Length: 272
Image 1: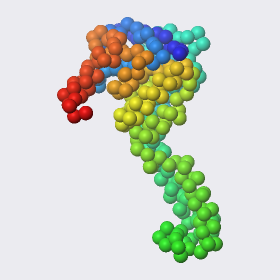
Image 2: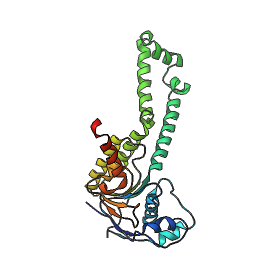
Image 3: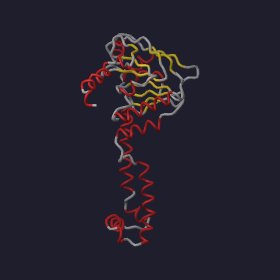
Image 4: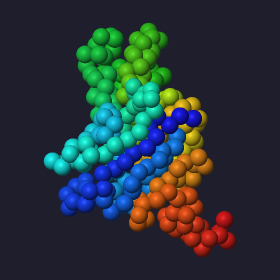
């Protein structure tokens, strides 16, 4: 199991501008990384800010921009890090939950355009089919002649192949997000993930945690900002509690949000 990024030293200069004012209260002198490192905290704790600073410091590619202002670049230059002698893998990247939603929206728009195109008069005409025949095959298939069915069969094969290029309409946001991570996370890589569990049902979060744990055993390193109890409970994960002052490393079962889940289930224990 590799740790390409070994340590990070954020700037702790006390200034009332972003991102200084977010990171300074953490009093986090340095972060020591494991193959899976988790930045935990409630909304407003600064975990996404710290991840964004880390991404800029490491020069990672990302799909969409995070928070930024005129002070951000200057702040990043005051931070330092320790990286493996071989450096970060070439395909290292920063993936935010917003990136996934943008990709899903684009995919669905593509699907809608393809769906419209494959039923256009021009495409039907290219296959020797009239819209009337196509509609007849849908409503009264027994009345369609065998010769016409041969044309419809060729067209249907074309239609299905085209729709497969953009078909995410039948899957939920959570399913599409999980599918994205399974297709775009690779072994021997380095990733920053900002709340990857967003829109995922618990069962999908559990699958994501298992996939991340598997990749970590295959020399992929993760730094993750998350609330997910399934990600927090990954046995090998090193967790930094950004709600604590100063911020510190904690075990998953010591975190306040995990205790809240425990209290809820203990309250209704007799129902299970």
